[in-house]
Length: 633
Ligand code: ADP
Image (tube, rainbow, N blue to C red; front, side):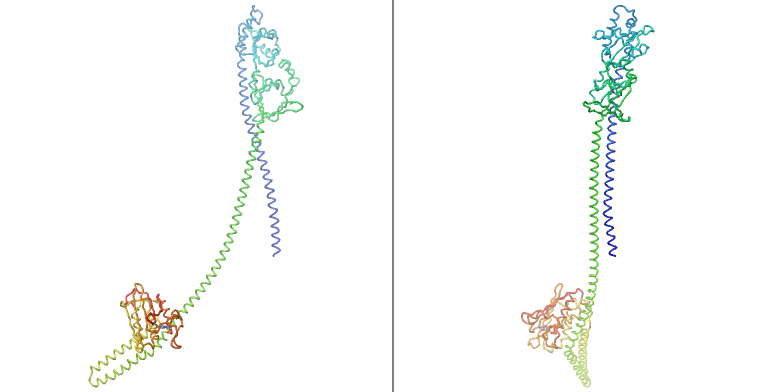
């Protein structure tokens, strides 16, 4: 049995140690995975949101720029058409012009050019030769220059609006050209050309954060917010493309080297990720990432690109990651605090349960002890009750025995008391017969009356004796004090007379009812009066004074004698059982002890003392009863 238990607890210990380690490892793994996932998701999300924001702003900016460019071009688009119908120009171009016609045309072109704000306005004949120009007075006027290689000239000569952009071969300035045919009747005799200063847009773009590029269909940057990128190619030009550009002399004197532009990913909703790598000197390359948006301006023959810097993305991602890390750390702290709190609470609950269990155990233990004590008490109560009953029985027996003993003591007196009337009755009867014989019936009748009185007295004595000998039940009832005293005195009468003693009963009010039992109260008085007679034996003066004094609630009876009194050192012992100073066979020492018990039963008290003038005084206090004398038992 013991070894089995040992095995079980060892296995429990082993499992108990392995399980938390495994659980902790799993928990750490889960936490690492969750943290990784949250950080990755946060970075992805912040990056996406920032890119979307950049894309949105770039689109708006780009649209504004494109609209601005469109507005600028649109403003000049119809100007050559309007100029083409000027009656001055066909004649200048056809050759049948009068003297001063070219000068007039020059002045007209200069005036209109100044009004329109164009860069140059000029007139070409059908061979591409410039006949008149607004810059006729400039250092390098266009007059006499042939621009037949320009595509806009060819378009105009074909009767349609020619439009083109290029770096001016004469001026070296970037311009946008609109050309419209000038007709003489139905015949196209030349073209009127308006050149705009398109480069001025760059200046307004430079102040912005973003790079703005206008590129041609070959990918050559024509306009750029970054001056270093101007006339660079987004992609290396093929030979074919290079030849076609050179054929129209669009970018005379520019080498059109590649910019170092690269697409970094697929185009998304917010734009296309691109990078531009420029040589930053001494072999170090400077690579810059952008988000590209582009709008094609097909009418102008170019693409407008906006390259937005994405530095903000990294900053925002770092910030987002920091916030996520703080949130995760806070969550972890909160979870730890919660976990610890729960552990503390469960520990407290466990402690409380343990304390409760211990308390319950103690309560059960106490209850058992109390039950046992209760049973013991009940047993003791039973024993006491039985002892009390036995004591009561013994007391009743004792009362009865002392009563009978008192009767025994009285018997001598009583026999005298009864013999005397019996002798008197006999002589009365004898005499009555004598008187009848003498024919003295009156005297005989007197004797008979005497006989009747004597028998009545004897009957009273016998009735008293019977009552006294009766075993009275213990209950209390209103009892006549006077009756109890009188009947006691009747029983003692023979002795009182025999010892030539006097009894003086002093009662202030008439009879009073007290709480007692008539036989027991009679027994008390009989005992006290007998003791008084005993004490006064051999004294010349033998008087017993019985004083009755009624109070509101109590009645006091004082019995004083003219005996020697109680020795002072014995006053406190007279009520002790078997205390007696009388000779053996004369006193049992139970009379006062029983009287004490009886008066206590009545709810009263009894005290012994010596009177100042000598003799003993017994004071009995009894409770006054409410009922009238008629109800006396
Ligand atoms: P007993 O009369 O059998 O001795 P009691 O209990 O009646 O027993 O009295 C106890 C004792 O108290 C008496 O022996 C006596 O010494 C004393 N005593 C009682 N009454 C008187 C009295 N009136 N005067 C003097 N002593 C008394």
